[in-house]
Amino acid sequence: MRRASLSRRVALFTTLGLAAVWAGAVLMMSAVLRSEQDELFDQQLVQTAHVLLPLVEQMHAQDIPVEVPQPAISMDEALVYRLVARDGRVLWQSELAGRATLPDAAGLTPGRVVPAPGYRLYATPFDAAGHALQIAAPLAERREAFREGMTSFLLPMVALLPLTWLIVGWISRRSLAPLRELGAEIAARDGSRLDMIDAGDWPDDLVQIAGVVNGFIARLSQALEAERAFATNAAHELRTPVAIALAQAQQLRETATAPEQVARLDALERALQRMRRLVARLLQLARADAGLGDSAEVHDLAALTRLVLAERARSDTARLAVDLPSGPVMARIDPDAFAIVLSNLIDNALQHSPPDSPVRLHLRQGAVLEVANKGAAVAAADLAGLTLRFARHRGDGFGLGLHICQQIVSAAEGKLEFISPAPARRDGFVVRVTLSPAVGNP
Image (cartoon, rainbow, N blue to C red; front, side, top):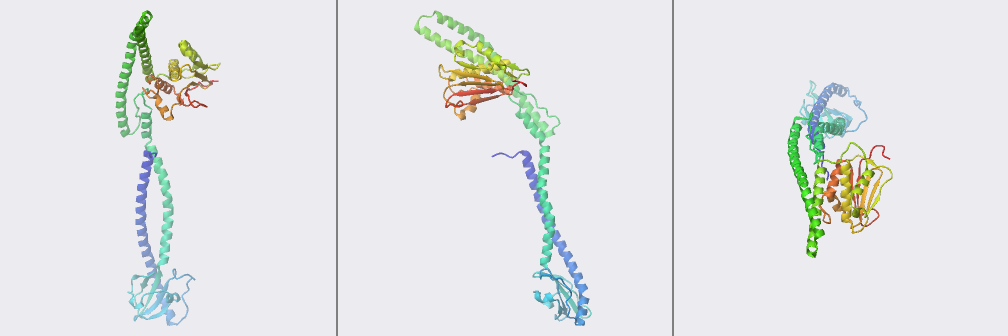
């Protein structure tokens, strides 16, 4: 499951917090709106009752059987009223009042607005003639007005939530941009790049974090330099003694006659040859860890390949099937680094392929080098671990060759790929190196 980024989390929780505040504000506003609306409608109800009282009294005194004109509306929206005497008798009422369910006229308190099922009622005080007007306004009309008012308010407010999410997200991304830059700077550091992080104009908190990371980088750089210096010095110091011991063993082998002595000297020579290869690998490892590979100049990989093959023993090159283009293949990589990569790939292929089986070496335009050999296929789960330091898959290698190749190719901004089984086969192993070709390379 993918984890949410820090900017997304900030935007999410900020938006949720604002939404909670917004919801609370809406609830408070709805309560205030309801109270103010009821107060306004009650005032209108009182004023309407006092205006209608003399008119209705006059109509009752003149016995005019005419209803005060009202639109043809439903009971849920119509005002109903009635003229009552002190004894509670209904002297005159509107046509719709007879259809409404109203409380007993004698039970209403004059001068107050009181609730009733489905209505708000008001009764005027009795005048000099002993008459009062009772008027009722349906609550359905008030509820409808409240719903319309709240809807008109909520729709634009709800539309503000996604806009708030976008604005807060943009603000959080802009605000946390230095944090992402710090993460990118830390991620860019590895064994070949341990320069200090420049905090620049970042916030103080990130400057402190960068300072702590720079302290770790400084200590790590010292440790790595000490490790590389030890490996390099040890390898250099061992080269001469190993070469001398190997020469002495070979000389003794030529003069030995007893079978037991010959067998022991052969074993000693094999051990010294293995030690010599290990010393060479340690020197290569030290150079690879130091960032060997990058080059500002372009070089012809085809010419470099011919030089490397010319320096190898005939027993090695006899098994190689070399396919080189007729023209140059230009790429940006250090010549010594390319020679180390090519030699290690050839050694790896010769070591892990069946005896006397051919090893195919193909260099093509686009700065692509492929070295293929026969042999049992490598499981897909094991391919990723082949470049780990001292990770040996099969054979008696040191587990350094492919790791050194990976370090050098990465420093040259190239790509190292493993393919197993080989294309169109059920077995085999292919190593593909893709380097940065020179601009204008054919």
